[in-house]
Length: 148
Image (cartoon, rainbow, N blue to C red; front, side):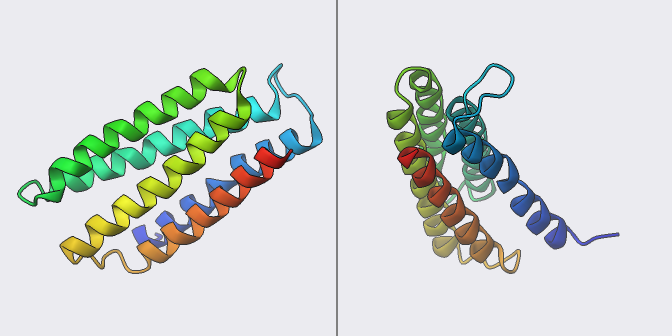
């Protein structure tokens, strides 16, 4: 049986596959299921940004007595609203939607990092490195789709 740390890393990197596939569809201007690559990229990106916002929510609940907890709760909801706004803009304003999502990824990464540092969280080992790599990859793919 695999350790949760291993599963976390594998799922994290596997989560990049839909980003890569939809970015390639966007760059090549190939529709799939009657959707453009940009539309699919935006939808998946919004879902993952919302998922990451849930991590902030969970972290806030785990550290409810800390002053940053309130901010994390508020930020988690703001990031979900940002993802929703991107979906609503995506059908007419792809560039704006993708830029909003990219900004959301940077913001959620920074917020999570700040909270973990403030709380002295070091476990699971390698998590922050993993999050940094995944976020960098996701931001690069957003840039690629913005340029297409």
